[in-house]
Image 1 (cartoon, rainbow, N blue to C red):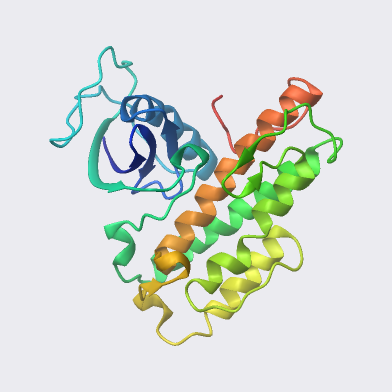
Image 2: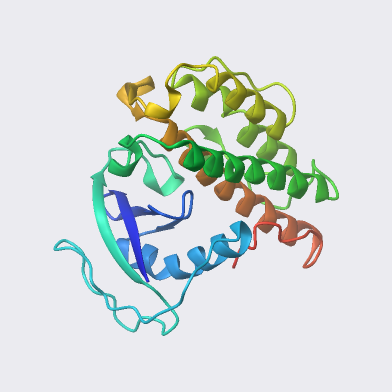
Length: 255
């Protein structure tokens, strides 16, 4: 089974995205580390989403600028780098501005419905994870700063941060959404507003904030990716703060 990947990097820091498992990603201090993490991420994502996934031997077939991995695990997948983006952003903190070539293509209604359903499922599951945290103001994590300010440390901070990209993401494709309500409610309202836009399935590419290109397909991917980043952080924080088994592993993360 071949896993198509987009590689975004800043010198050695790397984010690797799956093209076909929308929102699945890995990070690493270099490409090799990110590649080694991808099979577990695809397995985790598939268990959560219900997508079918096979496990096969890695053949190390990358394009010309990718080195082969040594000592790859047996239960892995064939991975192919189909696009590379060299970025000036802080990739180590998951800053990103890449648009996939796949994200420029129009959508058909069935595809839109599937991606919308998955994106709303992610919002609902993020809400469930948040609600399962015993004390939403408590965390044993040390404070740390990134390009966007202090990293959210408590469940409440992580929830608000993740929810409040709603208006930002939708506004980048011309939809005047807001952040009111739960993460699921404001996301549902955003899609309802989008669907009133003529020809939204044409998937127009917009030049948004900071000269970054956006499309509806990219918005789907950014929601799912952002949910996974902060859902994993919230789950890890909960285990460290409240103990193993204190919250359900709703996203099926393999830590």
